[in-house]
Length: 209
Image 1 (cartoon, rainbow, N blue to C red):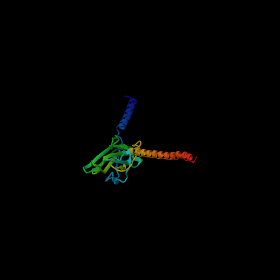
Image 2: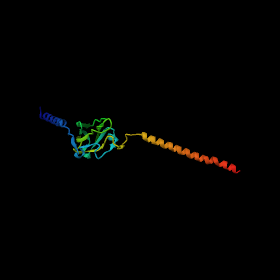
Image 3: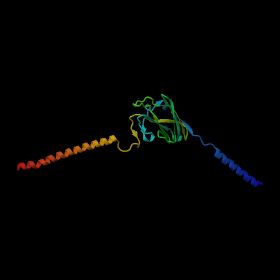
Image 4: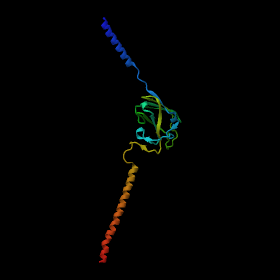
């Protein structure tokens, strides 16, 4: 093998080695964020910020609580998964939220929500509510701290915000119907009062003749 062939072979081997190193390099690991300790040790009903949003779990529901979590800064990126621990009368319960949305939980960028049982009995009494004790999350950006942003407690009187309800409700239809009936009656009475003097007028003039 001459010098030129040896040089070409050596250069190709070096390029192959560099490429193999590039392809074998591990992907950057997701950062871990933890919930603010001040947001733990609470039930949904006891949490200070309560709000029901259609795009974040909806509610309020008769026997379920909705918990909404949020990252603090844009640099944290988005949630990729969350692991939540709740205390119940039956012992600790662990729940996970991933990017594979389910009917009772989902990730929406820098926010995530989950719907849990409020421990309601058949009579509607809440006897075993979930109490959030810990939470960690994997995020696409930097780690740090995230928050329990709000809750929508079961059986509450909070209004639903968002667009999950469309069209008039049954109560609204009934109220509108009552208003229309009353308006119709008032119009009918006014017409009858207007007709009586008009009919009596010519009779009075005929008597004076």
